[in-house]
Image 1 (cartoon, rainbow, N blue to C red):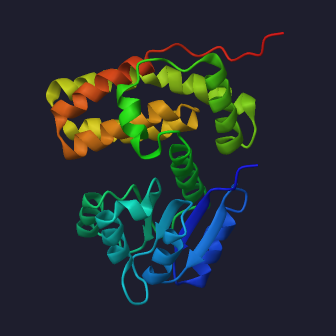
Image 2 (image 1 turned 90 degrees about the horizontal axis):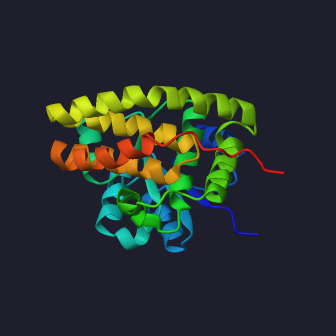
Length: 259
């Protein structure tokens, strides 16, 4: 059996550590905790970390210092995503964190569901074969997944996001596919207007929806759209939008088991 993904929590407040542990109690992860940047770097050097969750207010060096170190030394973080979980995320801090390629920011207090969903999405992206290149691969991928791949991804989504409730998943999938034409119209309007902000928001929204639907490659493409809109502008984002738009046009997959 493969070892469980390791999640590193850098947090000096024992109550928050307990909250995160409870939120991830049903997740198939190994939660490691520490209180300082020095301890976090030591654990990262041991390898095998899939996700780092850090507070900003820490004893000694701050969580921002940790993020800056990781940005300067990408080999240390490897394929892992970085999430900042803090009450101190101001507009200025958020801009700084985005410039350091922080994957996600959660403001305290966050719900158990929000925290669990964030971790599930990060681990789904981390588990893709190409790891750090998954987003670029999704942006250039042209071949649709096979029926078996689709079934496997949807089965994982049902287990992860719907507590094993397949009918609930299918109902949600139908509602999402009904919404996709509206998303396509909104994306086309944003692209025509050169509205990078609207494309970024659309990419952000679709990234979560598509991952919940068991479509991690399409989710990564939506995340690439979000990043391109934010960092490169409307022209670069529009090219990615055209690719994502085609994916949204795909019909509902037939994953009914055959006799």
